[in-house]
Length: 473
Image 1 (cartoon, rainbow, N blue to C red):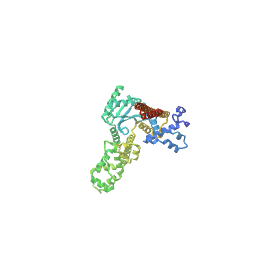
Image 2 (image 1 turned 180 degrees about the horizontal axis):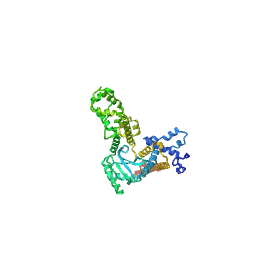
Image 3 (image 1 turned 180 degrees about the vertical axis):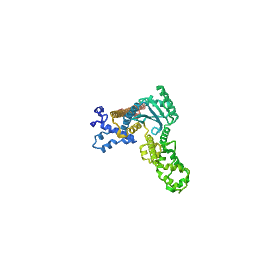
Image 4 (image 1 turned 120 degrees about the horizontal axis):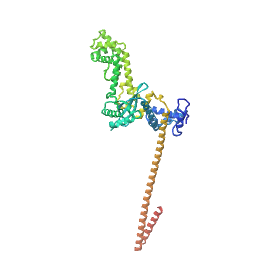
């Protein structure tokens, strides 16, 4: 077993003393096992992929003491994440949220592929480190659940944070959510005498409108510019002249004034074909082609030297906002492999991240701290992981004892069956002996009555057969 490192950043020696020899590994190996378990969860590896990982590390690093003691197979990773890492990360998040005076909950309905049931993911927003933090709290099953039951579960999940501090519920508009809102509102009002804020049924609409208001406040008139560019190329004659002058077959895309977050590709398309649009405007001004009806508005837009900077700034902010939304439910590998975020099929379950509650807690914490390498391997985390490993050891002992009990029961049943079979055979042999002796007596009586010695001979044979069976018995 390794010894603790002498660096000041490591746990104290008292922690090493609390790690029981033989039941859990020492600090360096335990730290490595926690790191590996978190990597498995955040990278969407299956627990089955950890089956021989200890042997692999020992082959790769034969001179490492940590690798020699590393043991993190399929079942151990499951116990480590379920009973050690996830509960610790969840308690850290709740303790931070409990320090604030108010918080907001918002819901996201999705389908759990593994359980084949609808579930409601509950996220929490609170003010921390001079900014708003959005963290995963828990998930609720929606199958055969009433609003009263869901309200009770939410209240239970928020007990450590303080249910009375709930400021607002962000809903997605379903009837169940509105009924749930009413029940939560009643509970909050009965406890505090105050009511929660009501900002409408869909938080995403609020997000769209917030970004639109921000763009309007800049006075850049981007919405009218993008709309005018699309209107210019509605006519086929204008498209034909544009292609003839520039050789480009790409045109501006439709702009939606109600869904600003989805206008990323609209702004990027304008940036892509802006040189061609300038060439087209120059050709119209030189009277080489006919001037379309909405040309004047487009001419003013193109002559703005700051238009590329404005579009680039807007598209980058929109892309960052879209990325922050999608990474909450789309697999990282899907987002990195896609050329455009808008090309990702968000309705395809294969693209969704694992919605297991405990895995979501771990992924949420790793994202919050900025990556796997920024995890604080505190004394509390190590002790939580050590407790999880001890639970696994007890599970193994109980499982082994159960298997032995099952084997003993099987042996006892087999023995009882053999005894029962022997008794049945003995009973049959005794009945055969009795029948043989009875037949022998009848033959002897016939021999005596008729004076026929052959009957006496048969009687003796039957007696000898009975005696032989008696010996066998």
